[in-house]
Image 1 (cartoon, rainbow, N blue to C red):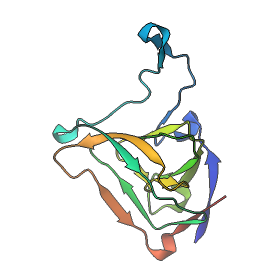
Image 2 (image 1 turned 90 degrees about the vertical axis):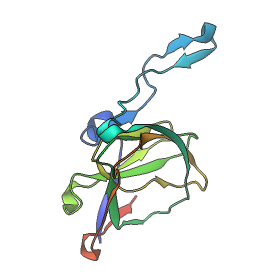
Image 3 (image 1 turned 45 degrees about the horizontal axis):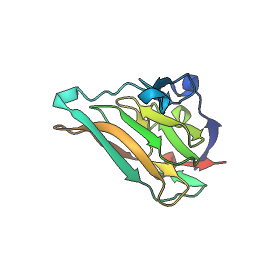
Length: 162
């Protein structure tokens, strides 16, 4: 197995795969000053083949490092955004081509950051370290096959290391 090092996520580094969701810019003050609103955090792409927006909550099982990357998935009909609902670190593994080990990237997120995977972005399923960590997920529902999974041969397996 080839090692895959983890890098800190930045909007620039993640741009080929989608959008980093952050609340680092100045928010709008709403509700007579009792709330702050961060508008337009990421594009939501669900229009393919009559899709609709789906807002859901994922409750994750904890994973441990080192972690073997044995498969990848993508969503050809829409984007998929993940925003953690607790300040706990998590990881994202993405690639341009599952058959090309050099195209893989592993990104560390600090728990205040989310990601929006662009349509067709290859990624490994949710990687979190806390049992029961929760994520608000915005993606596509509707007709059509919006999930493609690719199992990697043992020779293609990568291992995420610290």
